[in-house]
Length: 207
Image (cartoon, rainbow, N blue to C red; front, side, top):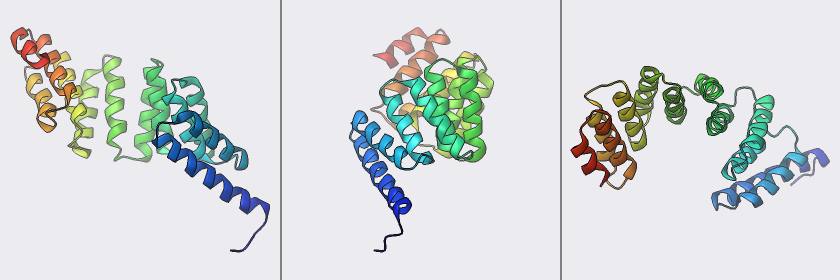
């Protein structure tokens, strides 16, 4: 293989460190992942993916402010980086800044209209802001894009309940039927029944 000089080798090394960082992250070794992502960034300061993945590692360690900074750097180097917007939205949501989370999820959707996860989490942000109708719309869109994502049915069921819809329990149960081992479906169904005053059915779902 030809040697094209220091810059090329630095980029190749950055890719190698980044790849190893991803491997560490997949093993749950976030501190070691951080070290490799940081080394990749030292070698290539414009490496958007390295900033984004380092942000994810920070988030997994509960360091949401540092995660925000890295996602912002990733976006600075790649303004159309949907995944970075989505992750920054998650960080804002974890900090309770739901309006800013909404803005980032919307940007993520703008650049990747088929991202079911972004629709789901924007729906959660809307729900936390009391905008249940808009939350429902996002949960429904997320379900269209990924019909097997059980927890989205759960969230939609709770949103129906918050709007006072009598169909809420059945919407929530749809999530349960997709994955009988997923406790969130039962808990969501129970929560919906409670909101509707159906306490006996709530007990059955939560037991």
